[in-house]
Image (cartoon, rainbow, N blue to C red):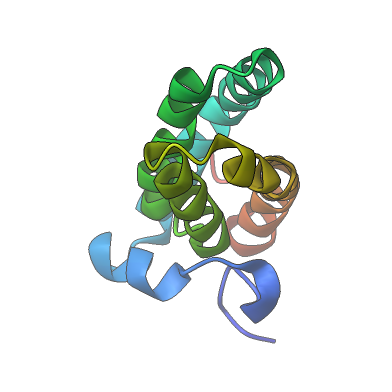
Length: 126
């Protein structure tokens, strides 16, 4: 069994994050936990602005996912958010809407797997 936190198909860029965080899984864990703390607020804000058709405020949340997701190494999430953000900036709200459900699904998947992976890698060290 590998000593890595994430599996290849998890959509996480663990190696880049570890390089940024001095190969410290403890620090990476803190980054991941901080990311998770914001997920519920992000999901609620995205859903509210999507449902009301408020593209600009929706874009603020999507743009934020690029940075937060990047810090956490959430490669797949960053890719989706980047595409959605660019379309909204171009005034292509109808095209950007197609990314809403995949982004929501990815956030919910990450909310589920990140704690599992932290537990498997680091256990109860808090």
